[in-house]
Length: 130
Image (cartoon, rainbow, N blue to C red; front, side, top):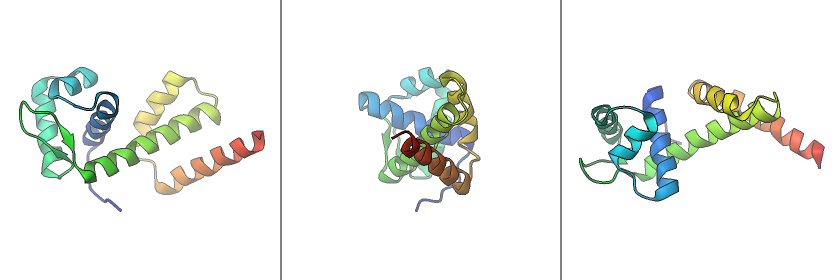
């Protein structure tokens, strides 16, 4: 069980690093800057913070690598995001783009209890359709 205090911004960057890694295996600072629409200097600041928490291995001008702890936490964040997005789409009939935006905001503050209830609801909906 990983319990690390991250800001919403740090969580977003960890998620982005994970998703880029899934898509293209190596992540450069410029990839993150493009995805997040921010300056390289700001990306560097966040990468240093994530490295200090041992979530990434970061050396300037080298690919950014998630640590084992970083991978586990990023997977949990992506899972929360995907669960919330699915809940908004399937349970509340909210369109994809709006559901994506809501999930991005709510994933940072959703309690484990809330996430569990969303998962149970979606599971029941799926079983009811079978």
